[in-house]
Image 1 (cartoon, rainbow, N blue to C red):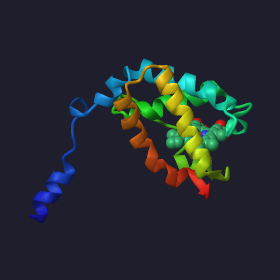
Image 2 (tube, rainbow, N blue to C red):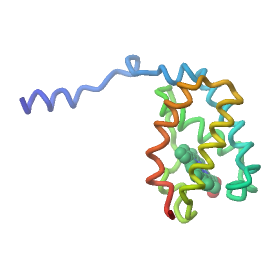
Image 3 (cartoon, rainbow, N blue to C red):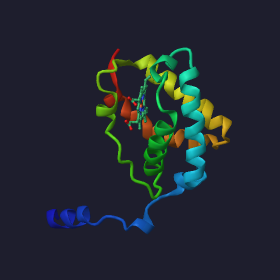
Image 4 (tube, rainbow, N blue to C red):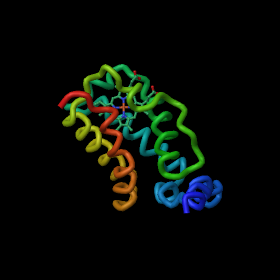
Length: 137
Ligand code: HEM
């Protein structure tokens, strides 16, 4: 039994068999990129968290987010930026700020016509990241 479990744990799905349904529901990489460009443009304008994004390179942020969400959605991408703990270290990001960012993302997804179910599937993949991003209550 133990050997069977070991063998099963060693078998991973080949790339072509991976579930890319979320990637397709978002319109592939171009669809994800369009939402992320919109999102990165909205962030500096938000009354609650905009100051965090003032003066940042929005294009870089949109590109990094595109790679990250493309990979999360099962698309053929590999996010190569810093992990979420390192990327947000020392920023003292609070829970209300995290929730505000999710709301801005929801605005961008709605504006770009991402179907509601596909919005929620992506949010479910992002939600656990709060552990690495939020460091004050
Ligand atoms: C699920 C939620 C989040 C995700 C997936 C996410 C993802 C990312 C990614 C991929 C980067 C680029 C890292 C790099 O290339 O250096 C980044 C940077 C950044 N994030 Fe987040 N983030 C999230 C939440 C937040 C929140 C809640 C805030 C603050 C309110 C925030 C503020 C920033 C800032 C200011 C940067 C730019 C850092 C810099 O360029 O110096 N993020 N984030």
